[in-house]
Length: 271
Ligand code: NDP
Image (cartoon, rainbow, N blue to C red; front, side, top):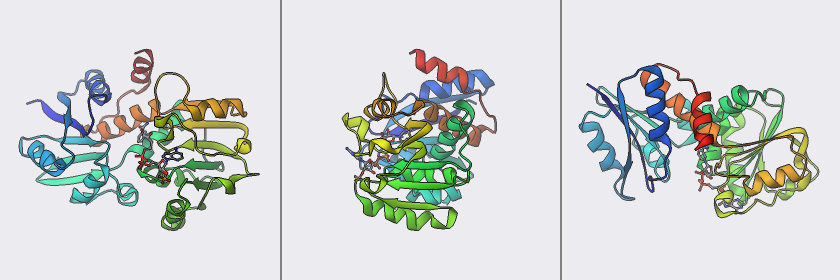
């Protein structure tokens, strides 16, 4: 029987996940279906239950339900526990296990696809929301020299510093505090690009050879990537690679098979 998977969110019509997973299944010869499910804003738990009871094997979870999925899971990976957000659910023996593959996807995109090592590097993460929280542990596991978090509401960045201090050299604060400092990798984990805006980032933060990475993706340069290009970043990347890599990590958790991501990234870029 064909195993059933899906992505749940609200809105969901724009999601590229069904296309990505269909490609992974075709490539690896796995017998599965993967659809998109729109859950009512107050009906996430019921949607999950219905899917599980109908024999579904696993779900991806996207905006705005990642935190609810974290609360709902009966067991959690360490990275999901720390992220306080879940993007991958697996249903097995009546249990719901939760994981968060966003950070692994980001790190894999940077290391494998963009060929940038993170070890010993100075990393800046902008934003302190769900996306930032989800990538901090996987970034710290790469043993950077330092990891700074800057946020519009600095208290949220300071909270993350306190929570993640046990895992590496991490500090949180505001954008003004970045004046005079430089970083080798600058990651935009804010939703500012969605509004066509740019966080108040000092222009001098991009060190020689710097990678500027925007988790958002779409046609053309985001406001952050345009700013980074103008102010000396050597390499620019949007979040399309992260999207495909986090999907591959979920696919691996469910099926035990790692799909090839490069052809899928190339296909989406040409769409
Ligand atoms: P949240 O709503 O949880 O957090 C938003 C963050 O952005 C907060 O830190 C907020 O600051 C900050 N922010 C919002 N607007 C501005 C602005 N105009 N200037 C400065 N800071 C701003 O969102 P998520 O963390 O879930 O998502 C962030 C982004 O990451 C989205 O664009 C999302 O699409 C992307 N993403 C991409 C993925 C991928 O696979 N490529 C995976 C996951 C996320 P404050 O705390 O002050 O409100």
